[in-house]
Image 1 (spheres, rainbow, N blue to C red):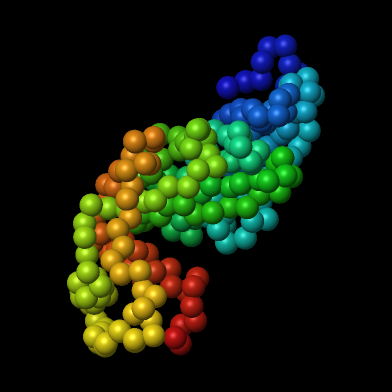
Image 2 (cartoon, rainbow, N blue to C red):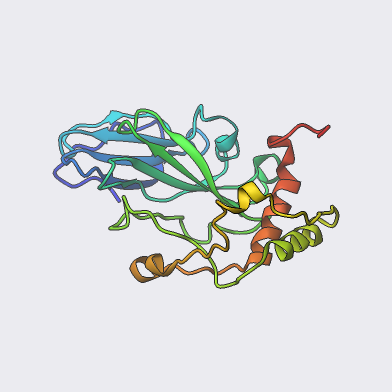
Length: 241
C-alpha cells in the first residue's frame, strides 16, 4: 500500500521496495511504513512519519543486528503488515523465514514465523520466534499477518479439552522421547497442606471473545515440542549434557 496521495513519499533506496505496508500509531499523526529493499537482499526497512505522512525518516530495522533469531531472515523472508497496539503503543512487524543454510537460493518455502516488537516508536526491535514447523513446511502460502484488537491488556487462560493425570503425562513423555523413566513417590506432608490439587484451565473467555479454541491435542503438541528441542538443542544446552 503506497502512502496517501497528499503525503510526501519516504526516501527511496537505490531500487524500488519489493513490498510496502503501512501501520498507524494510536497517537496520530505518527505513521509507519516498511518495505523490502530489493537491492540489498530482503532486509526489512522501516520509516516513521510524525506529521501524518508529510515527511518521513528512517527508523530501526526489525532484522539487522538482532542476532541468531533473525539470522535466517537476512536473505530469506516474506513480510506481513506493521501493526500498532492501541493499549501499550508497541509496534509489531511479522515475517516468515526459512533456514538459509539449507534453503538459500533453492527454496522459498518458509517454516518459521517471527514477530519483532518495538517499544520506542521503531528505534529498536526485539524479535521472537512465535511458531516453528518442520523444514520445507510452507507457512508463507500467503503473507503472514497479525492483528491488535479489544483483547489487548487482558489476560486469558489457554487450555484444552483433555483431562490428563500426572502419571499419564509422565508415561506419555517417556513414549514420545523414546526413553527415560519416572518414579512415583508419596507427596510430602508439608507440601500436601498447601497444594492446590487438580487444576483445569478454562479457555471459555478467549473462545467467546476471540473465537480461539485448541486445534492441536496434547499428544501432538508434546510431540512437536520434543522434536523441536531434539532438532535445535544446540541453541539451548551444551552437547555434553
